Length: 639
Image (cartoon, rainbow, N blue to C red; front, side, top):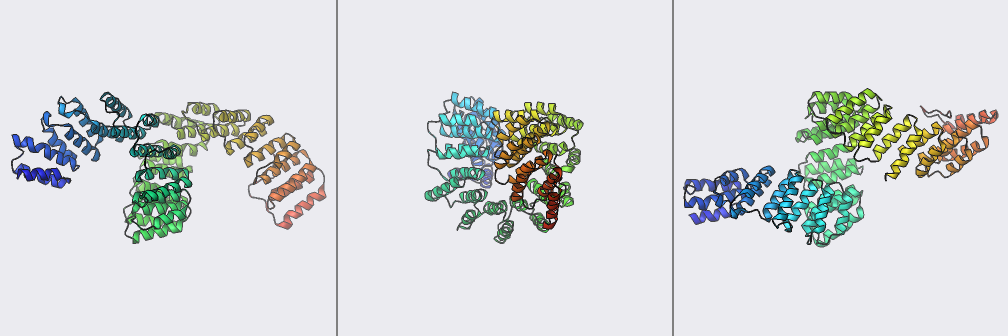
């Protein structure tokens, strides 16, 4: 009997069977004190650990004497706790093992692999680095399992630089090593480096390589590399694996090739909820909402249960009120609406459809989590301040996304006192150094006219993107500080950031109003390829009476901006009474925009300004004959 029990314990892989065998051992008295206990207790402990039942395994393990707590048992227990979602307990076991006086329980390469994985799960970068040092001291740092776990830990902790240094030092890089680096870089927001690393891969790729690289191709819109990987997967025989198929469907759809995504989707083979969801999301992304709805119905008829991700994807492409309500009802019946992602998608959908009451009903009847309040603030910016007050009363804590939605909405009030109060709350919440929040603060102070505060917040930001630079430039420009706006454009370019069209145009307009022609033209030269910037430059020169220069610049306007550029020159000619240049500008502006009544009005004003009343009346009759109408809210009086 004892031999049969020992064999059964060795084969046990299920918690229920381990529990049954445990009961039999206790009934037979084999766990009582004595030699048999020493024989069977470690084995039933191992059986529980192997089957993934961590809590009972730990209770039995604690009853074992030190000399029976071997490295093998410690490793089984640590791994079981990791699989059970208890990484902190796994680390406690590692500490117990390291402190054990028994020579039979020294940490080995597997121990370090599991312990480093626990640090990765807990985002304990410092603890992982300490384990790295301990592995070096113990002579285990060159082990492949340990190195791969260290790579994963550093990447999960956001220390890609440390991961790259370790990867570069590895004398032998297995396929797992390459996959770990590629997947970590892709998940860490650096798909370009992930894709480039795949091109350098010096180990045979496998299905895990494909599922790591394809999302990077999707993020980059790199259809060529994605197709190349698809061909490679076919040649190596793993393109039909479900995880690879799902990644291929997602990649083709996100890279803009819905036809190829359909072909992969329709190939013979199994499909799961991820396959259907990827295809539905791809249709929505590519503007094929009706096809997405049809696929959803087909999915249900095929017996595949949608999940909340499926519902979110459908709602993102829903622009019809009736359809949105139907999807909401379907989600309720299937129990998919309780998740935060579904709630936020419903709020955004109802807001887009103009159903504010329905959106508020979802908000106030749901989880009332921070994410749902953020979605409401982003969807209803005019009500953002009131929603924020309600959110705080409900006990939800503000996060970076809250401030990223709230600050731009409050900026329109141009209330400096309110700006300072909100800034104080941001600082107390410890979010002042988050880039999106800092940008919102800069924009809010700039609109409130406090350029000093805007500049201080900007200078304190650890990282500045084009949006942050643009907020400062727009703030200077809006309050008439043209020289400062132009200087910021130069400073931005020197910092390696490419100024955007909106910021450049704001700086040019501000310089024009301040009479800073040379400063403004320096900005125009930086944005020569932007149509609006070119038109702003024509206006700038025209205001200064430099009509010949303005005419040359208008003649060099990029495609699509000719009408605006020649129209700006025509307006300047009205101010300066230059009929000759003005007639050419009018002709060119009318050729570019024949339906723009403003050009005719300006030409009539020009003729009137120089006393050519008959031509002025002829132009006015032409406007009536052609049925041209002035756009509401537009003034055609030159400024």
